[in-house]
Amino acid sequence: MTQNRRFVCVPIALVVSLSASVALADGAAEKKGECSVDQFTMALRYQQQSAEVRALQMQAYNIATEKLDAAVAAAEDPSKLAIVTDVDETVIDNSALLARDLANCHDYDGWDTWLPWERDGDPVLIPGARQFLEHADKLGVVIRYVSDRSEEQKDYTLKALKKLDLPQVSAESVLLLGPPKVERRALVAKDHRIVMLLGDTLHDFDARFRKTPVAEQRATAEAESAKWGTEWIVFPNAGYGNWSKEPLKAWDAKPVIEKW
Image (cartoon, rainbow, N blue to C red; front, top):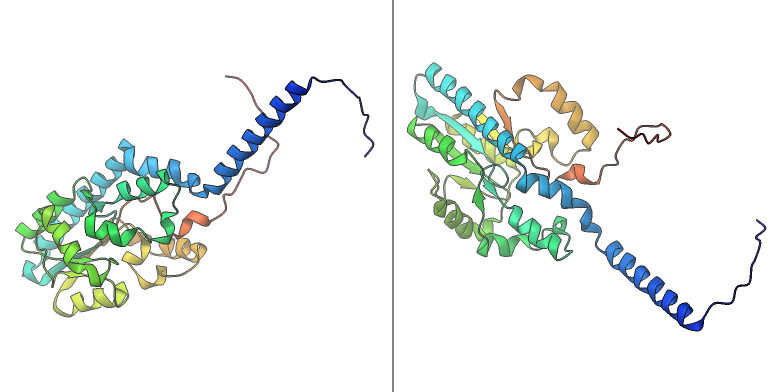
């Protein structure tokens, strides 16, 4: 490429000023580039602050209540029934930890801040969680909390759940990380008929969703369409998930900008 060059006399002070401005701009860009977790901010804002997510959470628990009532009505002995629920982003909200990590430009996807949060964090309840779980308890249904929180820190999780005044919280009812969730659900199924699973991540429902590509998860979700909202109650979680690194599919057309 051929370039036309023009020599212009520019005051030295202006050159220094422009150079400093460029350096500052480059530094700001570099600093912003280093903070790759900025990309999660909008999703986390939606998860923590939007009324829509709260509406979806309450909707999920309303559906769960309706389906549980029907299952109990059809059962000879409700005490033989069980519900299995995930904990994080299903019963309790941990978004304050994620927001703190984003503010510090720390990639929470590494989970290296999670153990201190389990010990000292202050999670809050997902809207509708306590009401639903108390309702299940009053119906005589067994509740099992199945979470991938640390087994070594189980006492802290028990303390957090009891502080939130949730029913049926005990060392026996809270099953933490060790065997995969499918095996922990199988332990519950030995003595009870599981009538409902609740969770925010698809491996809360079926082992076919665990450590599989997102395309396969989508296909399995569609194949099991009859279970959503009946046996499987899923909660929204825009904060994290193995979908977060998937590429977006864009409209393959030249951009046209028009004013309204």
